[in-house]
Structure formats: structure tokens, C-alpha cells
Image 1 (cartoon, each protein chain N blue to C red):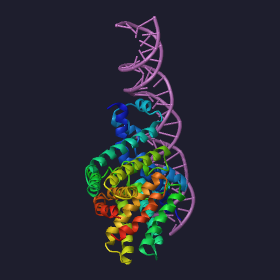
Image 2 (image 1 turned 90 degrees about the vertical axis):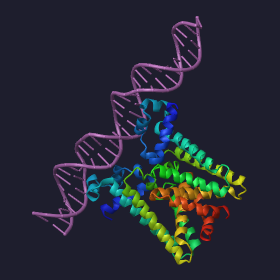
Image 3 (image 1 turned 135 degrees about the vertical axis):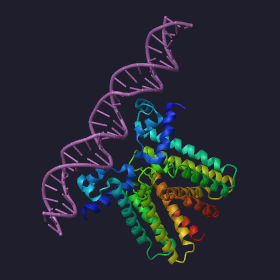
Length: 182
Length: 182
DNA sequence: CATAATTTACAGACCAGTCGGTCTATATTT
DNA sequence: AAATATAGACCGACTGGTCTGTAAATTATG
């Protein structure tokens, strides 16, 4: 893994925990053990460019995890496995790691709009991915239901993190069938 | 409105837009037009104490708005009016103001746990308030449904802000009845 | 009632540390 | 030689926080 990739990867980890404003370039450099010149060589536009790339990176990495959870399972079972991924990430990180995109998106409006747009693109990608999965399983109105399911998951992710209690995520399993059959 | 209240009120506005790390005390002082000594007189424990109070303040102020929207309406209509409150706040602020609590809660895990606990308390308060409203309208399993509804709303709030598009919030109206009748 | 003592509140200069970013210099690779 | 990448000293602006001082309000005491 080269310097550029390591910078993006570590930044992705940090913004997930602390968001845009909470993540400082000095801390990134310290963790990657790279001097400042290297960062500005690979990312001439500085922090904003690096964070934008880290948003895309975190989005793709998360999509792979969800894809693995869904693969080969019927709709209801697959979605429950997706929730288990989120639960596992919260508990493994002592409730520091919730949705890597939401952490940055919350600050949109006060930051470079390219970063907000990157967050939006990642969300759309996730949603299309899930809609395709549902369609292949014969679920009707898949696009709208995928939208709804992600809203549920995002919200439960926030509530579980704030309460340090995964019960808000686990509760969603009860409503998967309700949404799918609606 | 005295100095202490003005500090809390402005801080509440700022953390809603920029979260914990994005809100600096110098900016707060500038907006309130108060010297630093006054802040540390009223809040000897500094930024964390002020933000904790601002979280409670923002939580109560938001609860009143939701309460006004719900009052006197049947369940489905009241919940739709709640969504309209969120939509209105997003558009009026050019998508800067989403959930005032989530903005801070996203950073929990990296900040004083008292602040996270304050966020959790506000969420529980909102949820109990909504559960009571639903119970009074004869909805069964009101507590669980209130939990679910808030998860939906929180998630849609985040998605609408990130996309600069209220459609994610408005979509929730279609699912209110689905949840209430489940 | 007057005034002294005490508390509450406001005021801002100042501090060490960190912020994101620029700059020049040196390796390393092609 | 030229392009790419690493290296870190350095910069002004800003961070949250401390400090000393003053003004105003409140309480105690004669």
C-alpha cells in the first residue's frame, strides 16, 4: 500500500469517528507517519481533497461489506445480516464507528460543497445497489423501498451510537418485513 | 434575555450547523458580543459545559415545535405535520439545519461522555413524548412504534441534508400508516 | 437609612498549543 | 537529466483556556 492509499485509508477511519472538523491533518500525518510535504504532493488541494477521496473510499469499502452480507440470501435474511454488520462495527469500536458518510454529511452546509456531493453520490450508490438486490428477489417498488430502508438504517445507526446501545439497530429487523410487504 | 441564556441559544444554533468540533468558542463570543471572561464566569467548565447545556436547550426547543405540530391532530396527520416541520427547517436554512442533536451525537465517542449522555436523554424525552401522543390516540405498541418512527425521521433528516433534497423526508409520509398499522 | 462588605457579572489582555498551508531541499525512480 | 516522491522547517491565524482587574448588584451591619 503506497503513501497515497495509506493517507486515504487512515483519513477514512478518522472522519468516521470525528467527522470533518474533528479530523486534523496533523493527526492524519502522525498516524500515517508521513511528512506534510507528501500529503500536499499527493493532494495539492489539501484537506478538502483528501477528505473527499476518503469519503469515496469509505463508501466503497462499506458497500463491499453490505454486499457480502446480502449475497446469496433471501431479502429479509440478507437485510438482517446487513444490520448485523452495523451492530458488529459499533460494538467492535466501542460505539465510535457509525456510518462513515453520515459523520461527514452532518457538517455539510459549513464545508466545501464537493464533499457534500461526494456523500450524496455514495448514498445513491448504496441505494441503487440495494434496489438491484431487492429487484432480483422479486420485490416490487424496489427503489422506493431501498430508499426507505436506508433511512431507517441511518437513523437507527445514529440512535444506537448516541445511546451506546445496539437495540435501536436490532429493532429494525422487526420492521424489515413490514416495509418489504407494504 | 440575559448573557447566560444568549450564550446557550447562540451555541445551540451553531452546534446544529457545525457540530461539536466545528463550533469554536471565539465564534460564539463574537456572535453574542460578549467577552471571554463572561463565558467562563457562567460556565466554569468551559466549552463542554456550554455545549451540554445547548444540547438540552436545543432538544427542548425542538420538542416544543414537534408538540405544536402534533397537537389536536389524529396520529397520521400529526406525524405528517412533524415531517413538515423538519422540511421547513431544512429549506429555510438552505439545508444547514438538520437534527440539532444528531449533529453533536455523531461526534460522541471522541468527546466528553456527559455530552453524549445529554444527547441520549433528549432522544428518550422526544420518544416518550411521541409514545404518549400515540397512546392517547389508541395506537398499540406505542413505545416501540415511536422508537421506529424516530429512527425513520432521523435517517431521512440526514439523507435530505446530504442530498439537499427534502424528498427523503417527504417519502416518510407514505410509510407512517405502514408503521402505525403494523 | 446609610454604608461597608461581599458576591455576581462583565471585560479583555494574554498564554501555550494546534490549525491548515507554503516553502525549499533532498532522495528516489524512470 | 527529468519527473516523482519524501522530508520537515516554518508561517500566520486561530484554538480553548487562564489570568487580573473593574463595575454593578446584593447582603450585612452600624
